[in-house]
Length: 161
Image (tube, rainbow, N blue to C red; front, side, top):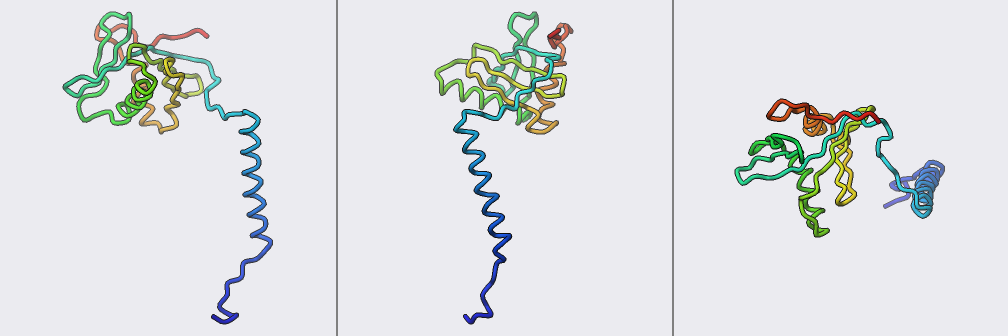
């Protein structure tokens, strides 16, 4: 290889990129060491919420159960449907099993005034911000806030907070 075949990289842009990279790492490290953790929780007013338990049935259906309400059980996913909904619920169930907890305590589905929807598990202190997965996937849960019970009663609990 002779001298003409060598590739030369301009030093100023290379040094600038290195300074930017090191600066970013230092800023992130300092933030973490200071104990600050990014929080994506919506601070907007809660406009609707619903407390639900979910069960997988032997025939492949997933049903929602609203504790304490009449005619509380309805199908939210039929066999072969609801992949995002099933995956999300299985992730929460797996976390509960790892902590030695059962499925007795319901989940809280919350809609905020800013359009965010979250699924909260008080048993594990886990919150999943559903809008992070796109409108179609968030919609799989959002419809549960407006689905009527088998007896036609209102589904979502409107809050006045």
